[in-house]
Image (cartoon, rainbow, N blue to C red; front, side, top):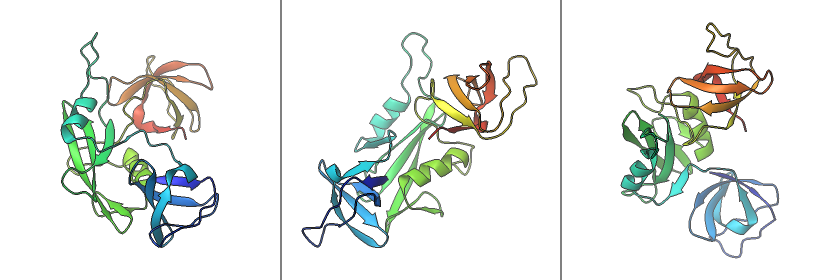
Length: 218
């Protein structure tokens, strides 16, 4: 994961990492007060109170495989439908390999688990290395995380969130909504894995759009 230093910090031992305010760090959670951090080729422990972590609500820490499945397969009590769409995911510590992690991803009626290997401050699922969890997650939002099926990572709850149109889309049917690249789109319903109901913040029009044409608004 990534973080920005709020204050300068001078290491008090060889196991800690010094940094300046504004520095960007790659971090791994260690305990309640400390993270393992890296800047360029230097590594060490950093106090959490000195940094601001980039948002990562998908990181659930040391939950079990079973707990991740229960969370991702939750159903709405009134409708009986799954609360989370296909591609909904979380990242957790691996139960078998303390240094590694797992991505648990909902697809159809089950959860698929992908091992994330952590080697020399780089993350791997397949052969491609990533400098941080954030980079890995962003990549697999638009590239399938599975080699046998088309599975793209999506946040566990997409409804009501703002997105940006990555491409132009011209409606062909009355139920669809046209949008231009760069338009801000508010997603209102995500029960279909391919088409989401949405409102165009620029035009005020509503309709369904292909979800692969949308990228999360940073």
